[in-house]
Length: 187
Image 1 (cartoon, rainbow, N blue to C red):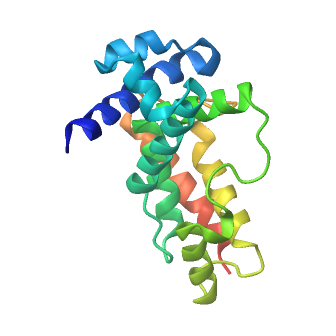
Image 2 (image 1 turned 90 degrees about the vertical axis):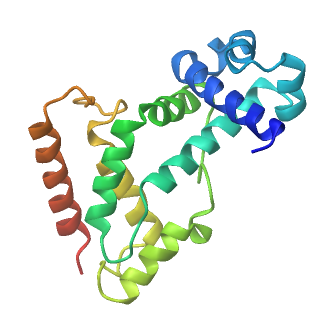
């Protein structure tokens, strides 16, 4: 990793913490710059604005979840459980997405267009091979699985799981989630 890439990485990491804690409006570029040990001028040269830095952070966090929770076409329940674990390990993504919804008015697909997403394409292949109900649009299946996996996330309305919860509770949730996804989307 060259010096510029290392600076960008430090900025993304520091900004993720700042934005997750304070949102877009409350985040302070002075703190991000100081924590990343990168000048504000360099930060603006890389990202242009605080809003563009937020967008880069959110995109980076989503990419991290994509890497942490691979979708295998024949194992949608396993994907849901991997998402649960990823949200548990990386609650910043959920907080960042919540801030984006609070401080902006999002509409439509928030990231990659659904038909272009490798995960949507994987679901379509699983539908074609008989693993997932083919009568449901693949993008809707993906959205519902994500929502189901977020049931216990910091954005959940009934309970926010943390790594401090007993292991037996996490095991119970994983089992329940996998079973619900299997039942909901089987052909």
